[in-house]
Length: 141
Image (cartoon, one colour):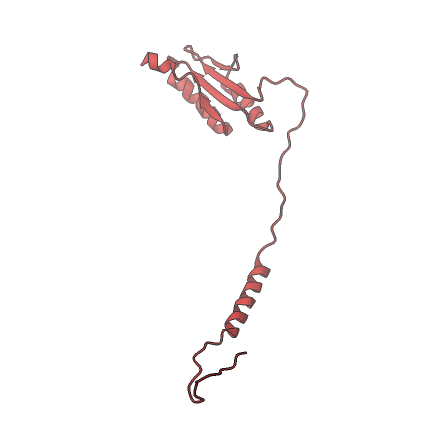
């Protein structure tokens, strides 16, 4: 509470605004907002990979998909079809750290084959993708 002292007449109205009710309302609103905020849960659901004894053709560092002129798809040097490619890509997603996928199509490979391979890669959800051997296109075109 304040007391007016000085040269103010008794008949003059007090010009200061009383902010106490405003502060009270703001504190009540703040408490209401704090109470109504939902409690956050700190649970993260992770599907851990199941250990298996079978040998995998998946390199944990980087994998290479090559498409030659005849339309043969190779995974790290081993010929595969689109179904096997999808299985290998799913295995890479199950690794703790996703390896880089390098795609190297031959300049004379048919577009439909490259397009089918890229569709399988997109459906698998690969996050690290790179095209290698791009310098070979400079000599062709």
